[in-house]
Length: 118
Length: 114
Image: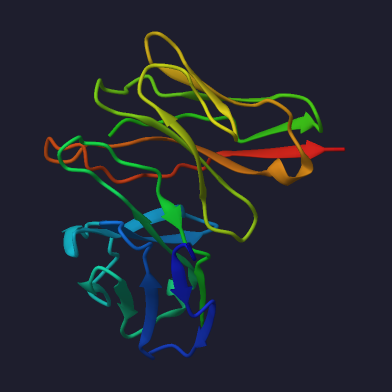
């Protein structure tokens, strides 16, 4: 299993540009999470999906951020327009949640995308 | 949401047991305790989780007190590669279901020295 795959690993962009981060979750996982990590704020949950449906996006900082999950094997996090304060490492994670049993197995994180907005 | 409290840093000699404490005094009955770690510049890695019983796997042991207000993660024989930030997290229930999101605090920076 290749794990959770994120791309790109590094992104440097100019302020005002659109940035798209990509994530491929582990096959068979039905929950997907986007996190952001900075020195100041630590790891913050931005949004999470269950069965491709956004469940809670209360962590999305503002309207410049949007996330989609068109199918079970792909998700994107888009920032438009980007600002220097968006510079951070963005992690995607996936997990398997069994509705019937209520069991929720450990989350698997990707390696992250380091975004720098200049 | 249940909060957790961890010491900001600890150190441990290589080969010795590392015992990382966590307080979660407001934990509710259906909330699990999860432990993750993050090695520098990598994504967080799942270690172990439990509800009320002690748990053990190939990585670590989790000891949860009877009142569930605190827990301890034990790395029985710490190695240099165990140097990382360790996060203790209480999983939050959402809308009565057990699907929950994980909130990470600041964790404990564990440094294992030779």
